[in-house]
Length: 356
Image (tube, rainbow, N blue to C red; front, side):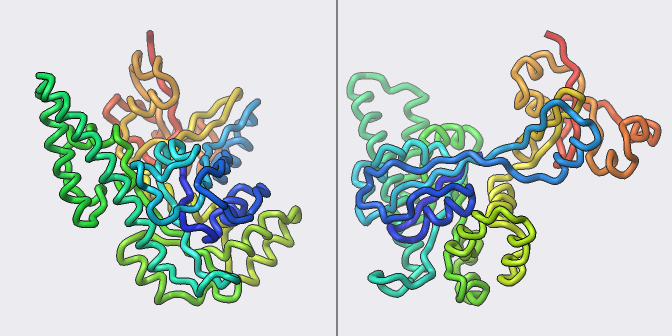
């Protein structure tokens, strides 16, 4: 999963990035949109993988990962070319979800924080960028028509893009547009910003953290939101003593790290679940979308497994832990074979039978 961090300059994006990744990227303000983004890949903490490794004692244990991309602060009108511009923008366009960081702390010489207004400014820029992308493509389609290339595929694409232009012109996100499967496929290729799942990170100082219920409720009317005490959590991430970290978290009323909280929200937002493959060589977690089939899960492991799919041997993590071994799971009748249309559930342990 890839998550792009966006926000206005000095919103604390890089502070949040450091808290999530345990890195020490410079937190000085970007001076222009040409600054290189910060990128980091981090493991997704999952106690189930740790427990499975204790049971199987594999040679390798592989967690799923999240890639965080901290892009330069968005400034008013920076979408003039249909992108926010800057060398890392393609990374943001390829993100599975966007995390919009809104400043909720005072910092000289910045004015008092206005997180609701800041969120609206960013959304406006996203909408402008999407509108320009759609209009530019419509121009190219019109030129194709003039050259006699009025194909059925182009006409379908034109119809969808005109709907998008009308929708976005009314300040509405593309994610709220009702599209059928064929239209969704067309739109997906453009990687429109407002077509992506988006969450808001309310970046508060440690004195105001946990005291913004009204503000959070207001944001939740339109977006999923999570509150971080960014500066505090960045410093917390640099502690090497787990016990000391727990004490500081308890003082702030924080039960989980910033990374774990954001991961849980992101998984729900994007619709990801995890399944596992196990054995003496490797215990590994895999991400797929909720509603994916056993065939699609096989493809996530390797295309050959999907191509030669026969059956999926399946049992659950909970049953394995409850009964202690695969043998006991089998004896309880909880080990089963599933076909390619089986809907994989979070926590399933799969072994794919295939022949190519």
